[in-house]
Length: 189
Image (cartoon, rainbow, N blue to C red):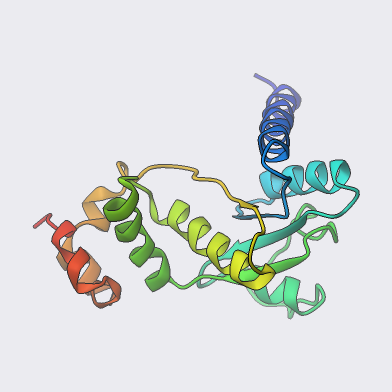
């Protein structure tokens, strides 16, 4: 398949996803915010462009950022970047449409993996949990009664040998971030 064809398929999927988000949230009073982490920025940019367009710019769109990334500081600094190795910004992220960025620590993501499994029965990857943490932070920032949407990009099944392995969590200094009552899920030896 050609690159152009792949890009068109991706754009069609983004439009379908955005339309679904917009229609479903409209039924319950509308959408106030969208937040997700990003790789190249294509999904975040596509969703942001769509939601800003249909809401006349009213929907706030945030980038969720993990440790080691420069994107949160880039957005918060007014899109200034100190040149250093490994710090490049794609045009999608530099579009000027992203309203703000939220930093989420590894500890917060890991804790959310365990909380979502325990409270909701949802088996999330750390990246999906990062999005949930960012959505909670965005909701707290925007205030009571706001509707925030994020993406649960994948499950924990590909990552379970790390996420639920006590020795791996300890080696990364993440085990202590799991609340005591949830450590029962770190069952892999």
